[in-house]
Length: 155
Image (cartoon, rainbow, N blue to C red; front, side):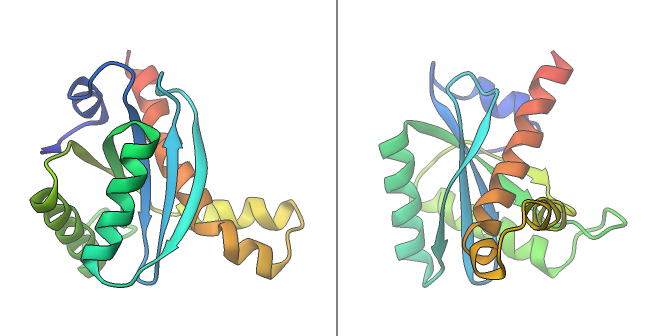
């Protein structure tokens, strides 16, 4: 089920289930995970996209392995807040994923997440090769951290 807010998503989880954050790119999927208390997000991995079924299986296996009960998926809104073709692609991925496995999902505005993460990685003086390896999972953590921070701001 697609939830309108992160709070609604968390209410749909079982006790101690974690949230997973996804940064869906055209070629990769950055993955992050939150602690069971939904306070801190950490990067986990980046997977190279192939076809939907193998990608979905990898995600679902990782969710099971890590005790994840719901997904926060970054929604790449345009700077004016409107939705473009990339948003449609992300929403379709979520719909396809829900057809294979019924799970709670919420979207989170990911505008400038990759820009912010890249700036931080540059400030940390990471080489271009090292940045390329971690930028997507770091962006997923940035997205997920924004979502879990909103839970504690609103409560």
